[in-house]
Image 1 (cartoon, rainbow, N blue to C red):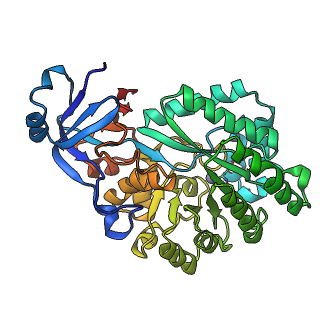
Image 2: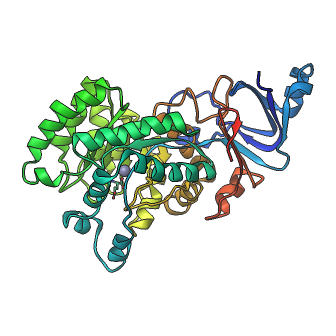
Length: 418
Ligand SMILES: N=CN[C@@H](CCC(=O)O)C(=O)O
Ligand SMILES: [Zn+2]
């Protein structure tokens, strides 16, 4: 039997526990469930008790001598960060596009000329499963090193059945091999594959009739995502794809209003998507509709910065009642990063979230965006013992010190992994 683990004397223990159930909006995003001189008791990878050090010392007085004791004096302890939107499984690299964009080419110019998502699809179609596992493992290690213990991962760099299946199977294998938890999303509608150019509706039909049923039958994904954008998939096509997924039990997500306002936020609210992603150009009506439907805004400030675009209106969304989550969007084109701490900094700097809101967006609300709020995202009895000990004294200091990795230690399911 493994020893119990006692984390004690955390200067600040941000539990993220709250009376509010479900995604947090408005003031609820500021409630971090803080405990000064906080303590956690863990057995078999699961949190058994949360409280002050004094409380847990009394409660477990007859077991203290059996425990592995971790002294977190002077440190902030938070839940393991959750990244609810990544394209982590891909082949190749696109550094030359970075230079093209610096010289004035836009993201869509590059994609329409056969680069962008299409370039990564060519690399990913060619890569073997073993190569993809090797490349992705390096990124997963980097996520853990930055305090991220659960991520979502999307397919979408195949856009043919064979490669979409390959990406999803790679995620399944990595889920077994790696300490990080990966929650899979099917995104066959990430772009229109070149072999279907001019025959978009035929591809939509193929995706609905041939791809989605197989993905669902093999239980390879929990979510279904579409790039709803001018020149990619129309709101009508997106709706058809997402409704077809719903009928098979796949929960809808939408890449919405990233480049142009296109009714994506409105569509997310209409079809009951769990989250809408990007939203840089979302309309006020769309934001209000999302607040009403409780759709989570999954905001990606590192992507906006990398594309040198104005960030999404995170402050306004929270004020209007939309629950906000944040993510790296880790992908080889518009956000090649695994740093959620940087994303938390950017959420404050470029979207004017408060430090407390930013932490909620990167933990509990992020877990809600991938339907894992009962397992991770907060430090509560019965949940996985996924947590980070930071080299800062407070969450305020963590958000203030910019662009540096302050991770001291990362624990996943009660095991120290960093
Ligand atoms: N915008 C669409 N898809 C990804 C980028 C994919 C890529 O450029 O490879 C995103 O969420 O940012
Ligand atoms: Zn994305």
